Length: 475
Image (cartoon, rainbow, N blue to C red; front, top):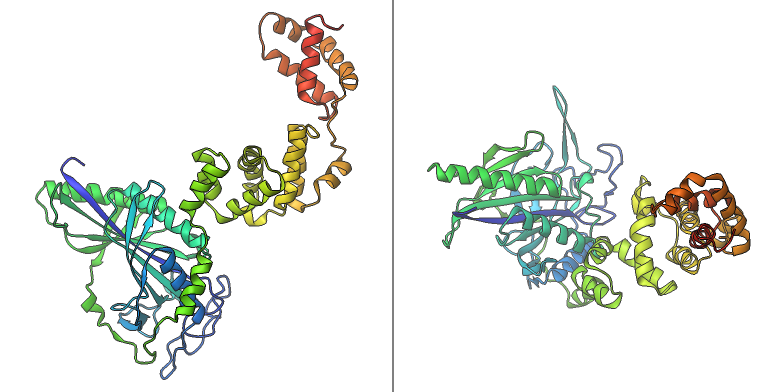
């Protein structure tokens, strides 16, 4: 944009990885039958009393520390009053004036630091299921521990918002507080966007976007809204503070409601929960669990393993990837080969599995053995990939698969020589093409040798022998 600066802030809601809900003992399991994970507390019966889930507090503290936030000395919950059909109490227990963590930041892979305004805990609402002529309410999700992470309005483009979400999701998965599965609603995002004249300090009127169910959807919605606001401002139209829904199919935003202010929710301290302070021992314990952050791991992978940036970025993108890679490197100390086989053949197999990486049965040590055997010439490329595919599905030891399938590579020149001669005799036209300068013709002959050997011949030795025979070194 030539005349305007884009200003973006994001509110990310993340379900915490707990067994039970934040104020009662009901299960947080996702796929249980509708309205089976409920009790008088989370269903909002009169006279019931909430009991705070200590693990939710621990995970909230861990997140606040990982995001470089200050933990507030005194913390209390408040009632946020509003009506939704799937909010049985007609209020949500949340935090407003005294959130758990404040004034932090997260560093993006670009090096930019995005400020974190606050991290607070609250309970999730239920879920409305809309049918053609009626709606249903499932209260299973009601009371699930929810953590809200509010950024400063520091992002300057929809692409940077996308990068922020990617970095935040990666961090949350690394510290083990959430599975961040957007399809299950474990991670949800609302975005605030405004435009201001270039060089001006005062921010423009912000618009909130909802209903974005993917990071791409967030980026697309923000791109549309930035263009819509630019067009309106250029036409001297007023921008209203409102909430708009992103219609992914139509590729546009539509008005949902006028934006509420804090006073509309009539916040007041939750009378059924006491004020409290986070014990210093809990803070120290959670510091130990934060571990190495993705941005630091990326720098270490580049220096320690000599990887390229694209390789490192993919390997750190999931904590399971990074852990598997490092364990494999400990078993076979050749990071470049381990990385190449992980990012190539192994991920090809992973993409075929319905459960993706969680469905992989091969251990890092067994994977490293396959890479080692290929590097030593015990297995050719085709054989190694076959062993890998079978081990991914079963984790049978590589040696057992090789013996069972008869996959030892033949590197004996004497055994391959006869097959090479047969390939030449049967494909004289290809031989003439090779002699005429068509270098790729030799690979067809190598393929014929591999076929005759049932994939066992060492392809490099086969090629050397073919070239030697054709060039008159042997006949």
